[in-house]
Image (cartoon, rainbow, N blue to C red; front, side):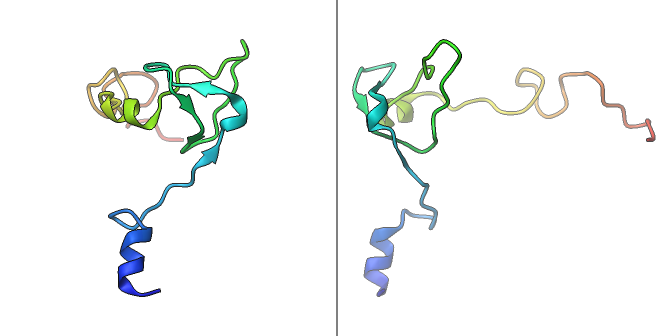
Length: 89
């Protein structure tokens, strides 16, 4: 593969995410109602038979980023709880 084709086939950064065909599930975007035919993950069906809120690529890009970490956004380890440094096992 020459260099021109290589840059066109991969997104910037060199990582291409696997996409799952979900067209048979008849999913729609929770925001705009557009049919969702593929997702970057395999959705899991809930006990009530739904897949929860799913968003199309465009609506998902507009959503604010998810907060990660523990303790309600106070950073890593800010939630208190069972871990203590002085404990020896």
